[in-house]
Amino acid sequence: MPERRRIPSLPDRLPDRLTALRTPADPGFWRSPVRGARFTAVLGLVLLAGLTLVFVTGLLSYAAYNPDLDPVNDKTPDKGWLGFYLFAWPTGPHWLYRLTQGLHVTVGIVLVPVLLAKLWSVIPRLCALPPARSVGHALERISLLLLVGGALFEFLTGLLNIQLDYLFPGSFYTLHFYGAWVFLAGFVAHVALKLPQAVRVLRSGIPRGEPEPLAAPDPLPATLSRRGALAMVGAGSLLLLVTSAGRSFDGPLRRIALLTPRGGTEQGPGPNAFQVNKTAAAVRIAPADTGERWRLTVRGPAGELRFSRAELLAMEQHSAALPIACVEGWSTSDQLWRGVRLSDLAALAGYPDSPPDVFVESLQRSGSFRKAALRDNQVRDGRSLLALEVNGAPLSPDHGYPARIIVPAAPGVLNTKWVETLTFGEL
Image (cartoon, rainbow, N blue to C red; front, side, top):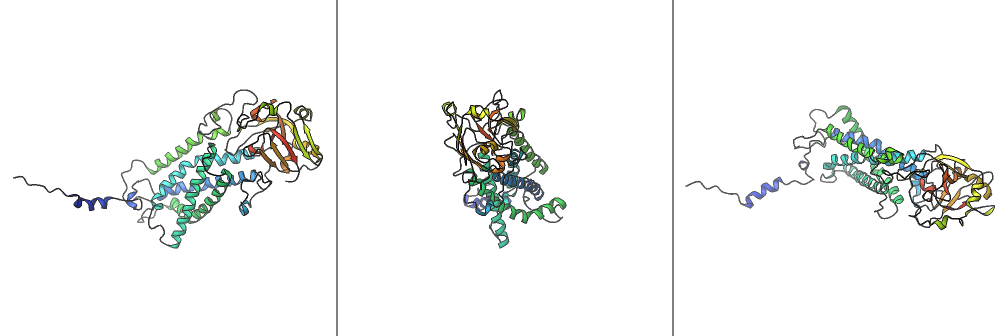
């Protein structure tokens, strides 16, 4: 008779199956041959340079709003000592905010693949147990929590703001501002702990005989080299650069900026054919609001003065070539604006020698920055205008007809459209 083979029962097989099961806390769970100290160090140094630039330009953007000038401009009233760096935002060079905010948003977008690759490269360490083996290790883990959580929060809220998708609760300005400081705490601690090690790995490599940190103990066969993985990350960043950076330029580059709301489309022909943020229809500005009955109210020591558009056009007109640059990172090239200097209107209001701050109110009845404050240095600049025309033609309704503010180097929201009232005085 043929020999009968014994089939292992389920209880016999179960111990082997349990032995084979691995959790993310087990180093053997992670088997990619790409992970390694040098791979992570390269990504880390790229993030060190890029995130430092993003953080500094973000602080400059906050300062450009002049939040300590007036409660209307201050979107984080409880900032306390976190506002230590605030200063009077300059008016020159006139492209300053276009540069700083363009860098802030563009570099942030380009770093997304690098950040994701860096998190992927160190995820075995993040899942390791026990969570803290010593006091020093516990401090390192806390810094990682602040760093990773803060970075993901900042990138997520920033990208949503660029896309004009406000899915998060509360004000973007407040959330992004405080999130940046939480991220910075973890970032500084992590750099202090890891930068010497990263530099040493890049200079000298891993000494012979020492196990390579972050490398899988039981790697799968390689299908991609570490250089190839870095090239893929770089290609992803380059793709994001090409499809987003053009929102800061006119012409062909804007048409290929398909990943941003201010790219990929043209505004049509004519002198007013350049980017806008809010349209007149979106904020419910009706033709009757800006018609013959419209008057500009100017207040100051001289009292309350009212001017029609025809009376403003009869005043001495001045021109200035200035861009519009917004917090979402998009901007226009220089447009030729023409109108009445703010300093001349300040003189009519009773400040002939030293123009003070000005509080600007729009016909727009709802939404952020329908009211805004400008500093005295902004009012004094001869390029700061109550613009009535652009590129040789009257303003279009979407560009602020019958009159709008245009100030060099100021964020776009401070270049108030559909101006109704100017109140000069110390704020």
